[in-house]
Image (cartoon, rainbow, N blue to C red):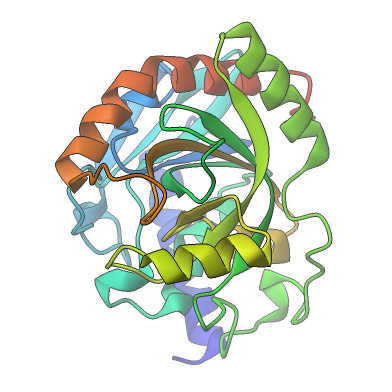
Length: 280
């Protein structure tokens, strides 16, 4: 698909959503990861729409991802939230992962909060903990910006020196402490999935400097930084990766653990939306 056609599709989708939620001008956006739908902030004056009804949006195929976009208000600010994301392992081109991020930017979003369930690469980072992202390693073998550049999306070679906003990270750490959640800052290792990592791969990721591993977040962050959005990544540790613990979790157990931590995550996200770290 030509970049001009991609831009046209982004503009069409954004225009459709603006008409649907005509009273909202969202400054902040949140994307919920596996099992974290209940962690989303409690919004006032909500307007909801299924992905299947949004032009250009396919239906999400992963259990635990509701496939719904919500508009609403929190702390005097307009917010848009995605309950469920799209993944490379679903068979979509990695470039498509940039599409919803570009739509959010076209809606006026300046801050993007990404949540996800992840596996821990280190014994000291335990299930139930929160990891606030400070950096990432892209091991997906591709990049969401390849072959679809348009000046409207930003520079062809965006700087990634500071992928996760320092002020938002600092605020998230403070809010986690207030919520009595054990949180650390860490590096996200992005892999394609959908198979989980082998013990040898886990050892390699750790040697490269990774703290946690997952199958999302990073393509969204790259697309967002090209658009100059400020990004915060909040990941809850659902399990130890292979070779660290003898316990093996199913996807259903990951979702169940997500339900347990959702209340704390909700508290942190609501605090971020109300904080002075958001400049608008």
